[in-house]
Image (tube, rainbow, N blue to C red):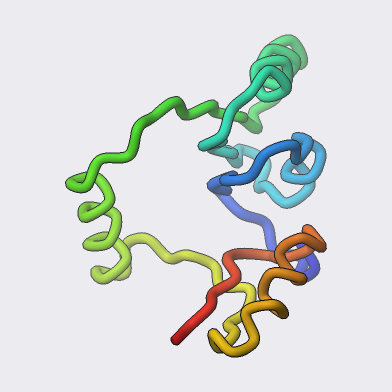
Length: 114
């Protein structure tokens, strides 16, 4: 993290980003929830167990449902779930948001607003 902050939980929503990218940004007992698990995720989970690390990588196999997404929205509105926003871009500058996204250096979500 460019900010140097450590996180208790990171929700990982992209493919092909190695565990090492997240490990340094976690608190000692931090967790990464991988919403796009693949073979590499499963191998990392096994390696973490062998090393007896308190940091965890948790693969999440799911099919999103409307009621679950509504529940997440309620948590955000109630201030119980705080998404980290890296940057905001107007729709007219969506290409800047896309460029920042593919750089792979964002700390949090990149928003495109109307």
